[in-house]
Length: 145
Figure 1 (spheres, helix red, strand yellow):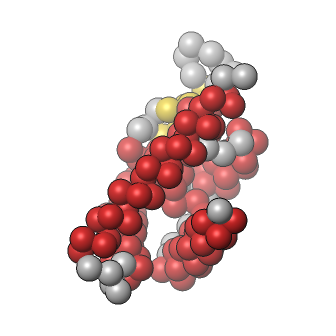
Figure 2: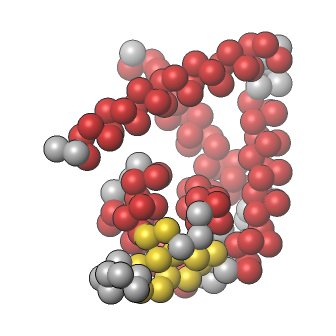
């Protein structure tokens, strides 16, 4: 199964390179696209919720959000229920970029699956979703320990 993770890692690295190239004029690094998408989809979530949703370490989220905030992509405000927690909101800059991000992701998916039939592409996505669900189950069980 090493081949599975190797293949997924290659696709992920190439995806980030593609995003970097496509977003060069925006100053948004490809590795931060997922943060913008998630914050725009669920404005007001806490940094902890964002870390859980993206399956990344809290310290990584804090660093990425600090960079996004410094570059005008998001804002962070203290949570009224817990002053130590920060709620994350997209800025108009992030919201304006959203259609471009969605179009870019669709174009990349279309490129990656161009050599597949429509049925093969659907099967691939279904299988990858099952694998992702299994990975999320493991992560969820670990976080409860």
